[in-house]
Every structure is written in C-alpha cells, then in structure tokens.
Length: 614
Image (tube, rainbow, N blue to C red; front, side, top):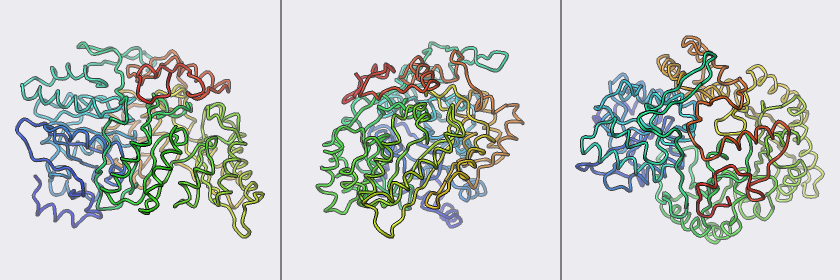
C-alpha cells in the first residue's frame, strides 16, 4: 500500500484529489483471501470520463460477484498527479486499497477509443511494467484488454497477453477463474494462454503472426499453438438475466454523466453504413419494460440521483417504449426524477413521447440526419427523408421547443460540395418551418446548432474499405459549410479534422504501429483526445521517425479482396454482407431495417432472447 502521509502530501498539490482517494458510496472493498485472484481494472482516461462509463460499472460489479476474485479500479492520472507520482517515486495504484498495479495478478484495460493508447502505455510506465509481452516474464501481472477499440486489436496487440473480444459479463469471470486455478496449480503462463483461447471471445495475440506483401499490404495472418484461425466475439444473449449494477458507485466529484444510465437494449436494427456500434453490437437484444422499471427504482433508491437516462443506440426502436415510459412516470414525477433520451430518429419521433419524457428538463432537442442531401443519406443508408426531418421538427415546435441540435458528418464516401452545402440549406428550411408554424410564439426565435464530425473509416462496417479524405479536403469542406450559412439563427460546431485523421490511422492500423505508440509515449504524449494536449505535428514527427506512412492506413481505398488487419476477428457479421452493403452505397441503394426485412448479415447465428433477428 502507498504511505498514507505521502499520499496526503501529494494530493494537496493536485487540482482534483477526488480523482484518486476512492472511498465513494457503494465502492466494493474486499479483504484479501488466500488463493484469490486480484484484478486491477484500468480505464486509460480521466476519472470523470471512466466513472461515466456504464460498461466499467457492469464489469466491476460482475467480476466482484465472484468470491475469489478481487477487482479494484484505476484511472489515468491527470498530468498534475502524474508529476507527483514520478517526483515522489510512487507507483500508480488502485482507488480501493491504494495497492500498486504491479502487485495485482491481472491488469485489465478497457479501451473505448483509439486515442487512449498513449494513456494506456503511460499507466503501464507509472506501474513499472514493460510494454511488450515479449519483455514480461512470469513475475509480471497478466495484462489484458477489452472494449470497442479491440475489434481491430492489431495496433496494440503486442502489448497484451489476451484481448477480450465482445461482451465480457460471462467471458471475463470465466477467464479469471481459469487463470486463478492455473496460477494456484503452478501452470506456466504459456500453458495457461493455450487454455485461455478456448474461453469465448479470447484472442491471444502471441499465437498469431502477420505476414506482409512487398507493397506493405497483409498477405496472411497465421495462427499457431492450436489457436483458432478466427476469434468470435462473446455476447450476452438474455439481458434480463445479465448483471446490472443496481448499486452503482456514486463519485464525490462531478463526472461527465451524473445520472443513472439505464441500458434499454443492445444492438441496432438500422444498419447505417458508417456506424461500427450498429454492426458489432448485433444481434438486437432488449430488456423488458418491467425489468428496466425495477432496475431504475433500485438505482434511484441506492444513489439519490434525480435523473435517469435511457441508454441505447436508437431509443425509439425499443418495442416497449410507451410501456416503459408509462411505468417510469408512475413514480418518477412524484420523486422529482427526470427522464432523458439520447438523440432521436426523426422517422420515429412523436409528440406523445416528447410530452411524456423530453419536456421535463430539456429546452432543446437533438436529431442526427448525418447528411444534408437525400442522395448522401441514401449512400449511408440513413433511411430518412427530408420531409420526415421537417415533420419531426414540426412536432418539436408544437411541443414548445425552440432549440434544435443537428448532427452531421463530412468527408463521407462519394460526398460532393453540393452535399456539404445541403447541410445549411436543410437547417435554413427548419428555421423557415419554425416561423411558419402555427405554434410559433410571437417574439420567440429559434436556435439551430449544426454539429459536424469528420468521417472515420471503422473496422467491421461497410465503409471500412473507403479511405478518409485528405486533411486539406476535410478542412476545406468545414470552411465551405461555415461560409454557406446565411442565417444568424444557425451556428456551426465542428470536430477537429486532425484528431479524426489520427483516429483513422489507428482504426485501420496493424502491428507495425505499436512502435509509434511507444515512441509517442517516450516524447511525453498523452491525453490525445483532449484539445489541450493533442499535437498533430508531434504525431507526424513520430510516424516519420518510425518510418511509417500514416496515410497508408487512413487515406487509402482498400480493395475488397485485400486481407484486412482484423480479418481474424469475427464480429458476428459476415464480410460478404459488408461488401454487399459497400457496393450498395456506391449505387445509392438503401437496405431496409432488420424488422422490415432480414438482410442476412449473419448476426442471427448468435440467437439471443427478445431479439428481432429471425
């Protein structure tokens, strides 16, 4: 354990001591047991970000349900705390017991975003643990990872003994129990790893070798030591029976989401061609309204939060949404607990829902058309029309809304200048619709926020083969959009194109990128997703120093028959389906949602309770 007096001295020198003290309400503290397995669950970003992540709360709770597994938390220290750790020669420690990470049996990282990779290495550095698996021996902890970024695990594969693919509620406890038994029986790490790849969703990178063609493309990925040629993701089939944290930890300091996050369903029926989550979380699986209502009551009772957010990819697709909102409103109004929803699909937005839920706190409303023109919306398979967008806004105006936020992307495949200009044109039509509305109140104006992010080609999507536009082109289109806005009632916010460029490099990268991540760490780069720390020029220098052409990964169109770095990872949706969807995008042909017609993506092979997949 860390010396308490020294810790107090260090905490006096940092901006937010609450990030490091632990002791929060509902924190799980276990006494050490003979024969137990200890797990340091690490989130490579700030405490405020990590403690807002529902996945962290679920896995922390479900792992600790095992009597012989002790799981504690650790977050990336902010730069002021890192300075104190290094100056005082104090290793990075967990919140619950203040135990150094190196003293745990397992160090498990949750990788939510590609730009957290330098933070991950920085945490290992602060723990005194070698980065590469080849540099670690039997005395070091087992280092593993999971999370959305691991659907292409290759850029960070050389750092991890095991990478968990998919949902970990059942597979991670099974892996840990296997490791506990192997360790207690003095089984070597290599022999354990041979058993580990038999656990659902477990990828052991050291058993796979990537071979390259002279032009730098991949010729093959070869499995050895009996490992499977493809690793299939793990999923939870019945969400009603799966673990949900009804006593979540309540932080002492403000976090990004200070509210209850009620997971309504997993998966998506829609099939937007740019969206990784909509593919990798298939098949679609719902919880019952009865179960959700009970979980919400327990969470409010155990936390004191006064807001519940219904969490999903597309909340209006939930079959029991009217029943759920009715059940929640039976008691939330009396207890002064408000409900909030994520952005709504315009084709399923209706006034009754807004009146029930969205009028409690929100003065505005959020829609995500993603593209301004109908042509481009068809390319990305958004399956909404301009008239549906305008009708949804009419409903919002009828409900008294005078602030609308619209999410779009720029740099999408086949995008033209006309598609960009169509964004402010659509926003202006909404402004005009507001003033023409019979529900428009005299003296009240409208505010339209156009928020635009840059397209990033993601693994396991139909757009994984399409290269990202050049940095200059992305910036040019951002400027074109800004200069095309003529109304003062329309504001434009955009995502930094340089950040998206780096994200694309690691999104489609392979193992040759790992030296660049190490070099970036050596140069003091961390918190790359934070504006105050991100430095694109430094990254360009790193790639140059390592002999890497980043545009090979981010900008290049990839032939359909080329071996992809992540082809040996099975997300449950077939490559043949993704190719069909990519070709349909090029011709502007849309694909119906899963409820209207099964398109044969392959995800129904997983089964799943209350799934709409045939």
